[in-house]
Image (cartoon, rainbow, N blue to C red; front, side):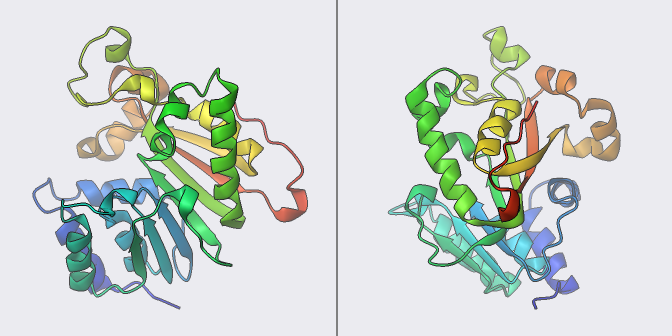
Length: 256
């Protein structure tokens, strides 16, 4: 079993927090993965970008991590090379970065204890995401995607979904959000809607947490970590769910 290495942790945070306020990333990953024990576990990071969260899981004791990032296929941005350099610095060999979409990924007989979609759930099928609340074809597309996701999850596997909700004060006023100026709000959906569709695929126990600014630490979470404050700021959320045990897979969950 892979055990966390304190020196590896230090190297990880030195790398992850390069150029930012010290402690911000540490606070964020502690919040993001609250209640998750990586020791000896496997994780699938879907749309994982440069793989930093995958590397965090490995540094926390995960024995195997797969990071799917389709944009590195034929990319000239150097993402893959940067990942390999960081993995080498951290001494991590448990993380594999693959240029694959969820739709195309073949794990063989492998399943995972932890599944992460960090700012990627809407990109699984962006056109379908836009119309998901009202279009049957869009709903069928995500039913297939979430069915694939469910097939990759072991019973009681943890699922973390991080994204922005569709509604935001600035978006509703047709103004540029000063905190997230590039977000196209119509290309996102609410965590409640995601939870309902994921429940149909076999995930239960939805918990929705609303983000505040990491620089404000715990006080920010206490004062601004709610739906109303998030709507006025970034509308960022973290939705956590669990894969239903196979014995009760026939039952349906209802998320509010």
